[in-house]
Image (tube, rainbow, N blue to C red; front, top):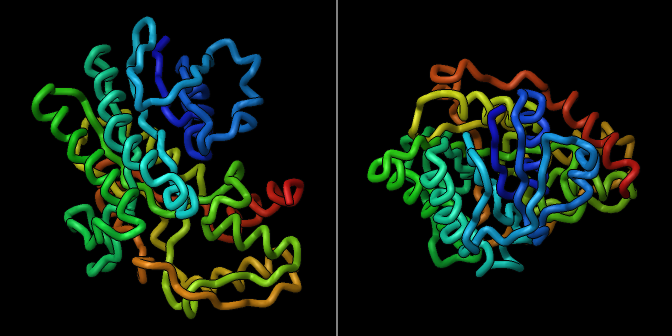
Length: 310
């Protein structure tokens, strides 16, 4: 039986990835210190004999007994609220944490997959964003702690691949949503759904003309799993290229929830990207992957999950 280690295993994406790996026949070891992860995301695995959990800060040395075939590095604060409240931790987990996870992969002669982010492109001057684009990032801005942590993580991952011959993969994750998101994590999907379900004003930053592209979590995890099984080492965008404005998205949430909420407009945060849409040509050509869950279906499922948690 193959063994996979998932750092950030109690997080939104880490827990869904764990479920997929178990379904594919892996034994999984989850690692998390719950700084932003939620133990409840793993409650359904308490009696799963192929799942083990280690409570640990990955910025400390990682030692997993026995053979390891794949290391998935998903440990990191990943929402604006998180990395603005935890700037030093965000930088440390992107640097020291990634270094330790790569060290584990090297020691075990295992594959390694880095969860990177579309934030590597910053406030992009190229649209849609291809993997060849180097980005437009403010390294000393408030979002820089996350952007630069992930850019460093990509750099050290490629260094381990080139110098130590570690079998590495890099996924650049675009806006993803679905069950197990934290209601108040600062990201647009749970924020809008939470406000709509309570019939509160929906807070739109700026004039709402900035665009985003939203990928349902099952599509994202499918792309990540396919990437982990291949032999391609350059970054790969995984996301849904269907683009809409934040104002349109808020109106969609109001309609799907049947909410009485109205839109209110707030100042745009510093360095907030004006456009965000992945070019997924590489994912299609290299992995045969494209998203299959449309926004209406994904949002309906996500809203149902949040209804019992508002």
